Image (cartoon, rainbow, N blue to C red; front, side):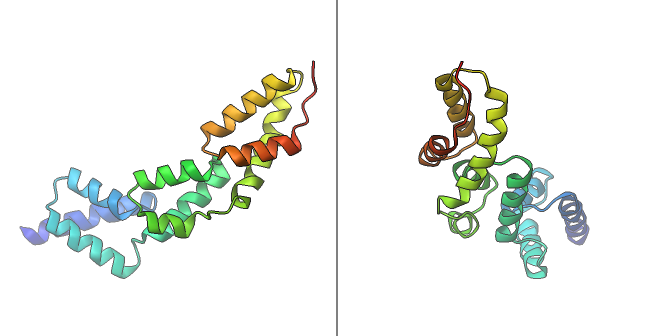
Length: 157
C-alpha cells in the first residue's frame, strides 16, 4: 500500500512539474492537498531535489525572467510574489538584484509605452497616472521619480 502511495505521489508531482516549474513549497502544498502523508512528501521532494527536478533558485530565476518579459513588475512586487511561492529571502536576494539599474530600464520602457496613451492630458494628471501605474506594479518611488523626471514627454493641454 505504501509503495502504491509513493508511486501515485511521484506521478502526480511529475505531472505538476511538466505543466510548469514549481517551488518546493508549492509542490509540498499541492501534494498535501491531494492527501499524501508528510513523510512521503518529504522523501519525494528530497528525491526530486537530488535529481535536479526541483530547485528553488532556478524556479525563482525563471519566474522573474518570465515576469519581466510578459508582465513587468518591480522588485517589490517580484519579492512579494516569490515569498508567496515559498522562496526563502536568501534565494530571493540571489535572484533579484538590489541595485536600482535593474528597475530603471524597465520603468523607462513602461513610461514610453504608457506615455503614448496619456498624450493630450494635462502634464500633472498624466504624471499622476504614470506614478500610480508604476507603483501598482511594485516599482520603488525613487526609481519612478527619477525616470519620470528625466523622460516625461507628454504634451500639455
